[in-house]
Length: 144
Image (cartoon, rainbow, N blue to C red; front, side):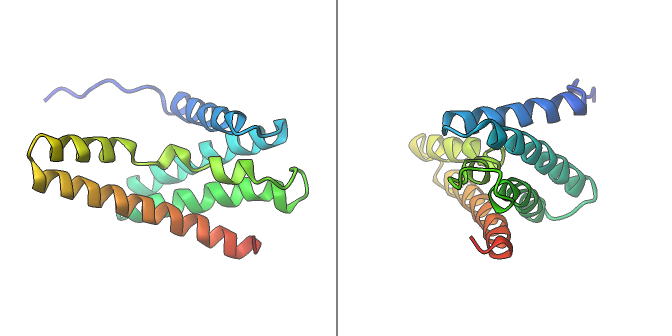
């Protein structure tokens, strides 16, 4: 079987960082928030990729990524570099959101594939739960 072509890893990390910074910009983040979100999103994706490569449970990989991304982004507020609105903190984990799973879940349910739809929906909820746990862990560390 022929392997599909992939973008270079550095390019994916760069573009995910830019996407995170773009979301932060949409949330009216300051330039410092954008910089922290860029770094947090790129490093978070790197952590997820490395966790998957090390054969961790996929949900644990999402947890590690959310924890590290929110920990880096939360540093902006904790160090007093941000305006206290936590734009970077909130938008740094958006690259992990399981939108495709939820869309496919609803599509399957509408098409009558109830079991597939429920399974995909549960997977999406588990991913969302692990994202929330990662953010909660960093919030407990920073005492937000």
